[in-house]
Length: 273
Ligand code: PAF
Image 1: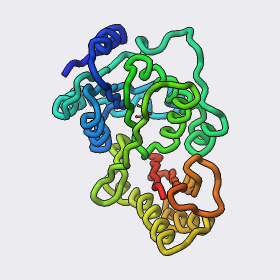
Image 2: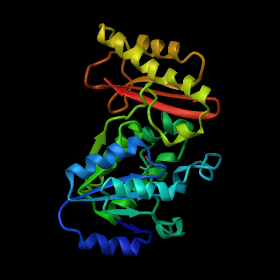
Image 3: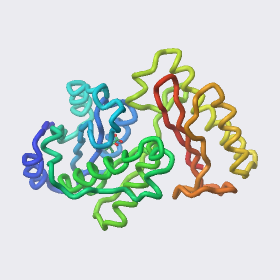
Image 4: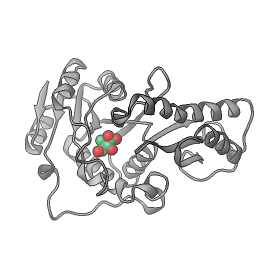
């Protein structure tokens, strides 16, 4: 496995690769969720590139950019053991310059839900993802369904900018107790981890009600809120998979989305129905 930190070197290495290339973009602090993306990329491509870059442009000024976990050595070991061909770990000043076109995510999609609490976050995500796509020219790029809104905005960018990359959505990976894996789970104390289970319980209760025949989106939102009653809830929503409000649940077209604070830590989770 090669570790590359300069964009120039990456472009040169990429031009030597034969066959398909799978890209797994990450911000590091790799966990089993990332591993499942890497495994899928490994199975489906001749070459696998993992990018590890804590992207400053997607953090708001008061967010955790500085303290976001950085575990470069451990991440590289995980990549070696998982059969990754290239790990790309750039510095910020190699990715961004002072003068460059702005990439702005569509306002109607990027300023709701996550974007309402984190205005501008998705502009930063799309900006770095587009740069990574241009650098790596991947055949396939792997993103977790846990960041459902991010995934949808990336799919929309690929479609509307006519990018030739296939986006592969990957299932959420959970701890045995149901907690969705996230690099930010490391911020939680043991008792906060227990409180955080309310998110997956809310989704489970909602899906059980739907399985029993409930189709009223408002009622399902109330079921989620009941399970989340001890947390500060940012949103608990039933939406169509293209993020439009729905009054009635349609199976295979719906997504349940939650964001809630456990102490000071904001967690998200979702379920595709
Ligand atoms: O999901 C993430 O880890 C990041 O938002 C991504 C896609 C790597 C862009 O920085």
